[in-house]
Length: 235
Image (tube, rainbow, N blue to C red; front, side):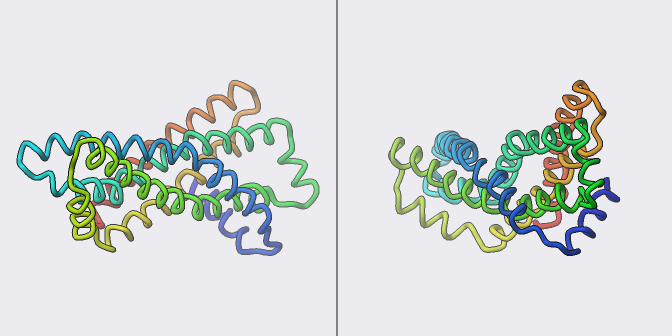
C-alpha cells in the first residue's frame, strides 16, 4: 500500500496535469457529500447539546455549554464523523468504480493507450480527498455548533450570550488547526485505502463486494486509530 501511495504521488507531479479530473473528483467527494455531512452534523450537535445541558445543569454549569459543544466538535467529532460519512458515501463508490474498471479491463485499456492509470484515475481522487475533506469538516463544525445552540438555547432555555461567549473564550486557533490537520490526514487515508482496494480487487463480482467492504471497514478503523495517535501528539 505504501508503494502504491508513493507511486501515485510520483505520477501526480509529472505532466500532463489533469485539473479537470481533479475538479470532477472534488465535486464527487466534496459537494455530493455535503447533504449527508450537514444532516449528520445537525443531529450530532443537537444530541450533544441535549446531553451536555442536562449533565452540566447538575453542577450548575450551563453557562459553559457553548465551550463544551465547540471543543467537542472542532477537536474530535467534526473530523471523525465527517470522515466516516465520506468513507461510507464516497469511499465505497470509489472502490466500486475502480474495481469495475479493473474487472472490465478498462484499466488495462488505459495502459494500452499509454495513459498511466495511477495518474489518470488515482491521483485526482487523492488530491480531491485532501481538498474536499477539510471543507466538509469546516461545514460539519459550523452546523454542529449551531445544532447545539438550537437545542441548548432555543429549546431548553439557555442563555445565548453565555453560549457564544464561552465558545469564543474556550476554542483557540490551535484547536482549529488540529481539526484541519486531522481532516487532511483523514482525507488522505480514505482516498488511499479505497483506491488501493479497488485497484487490486479480485476479478469477480464476489471479489468486488469483498474489496468494497474491506475498504470501508479498514478506512473507518484507520481513521479512529490515527485519530488517537494524532490527538496524543496535538494535546
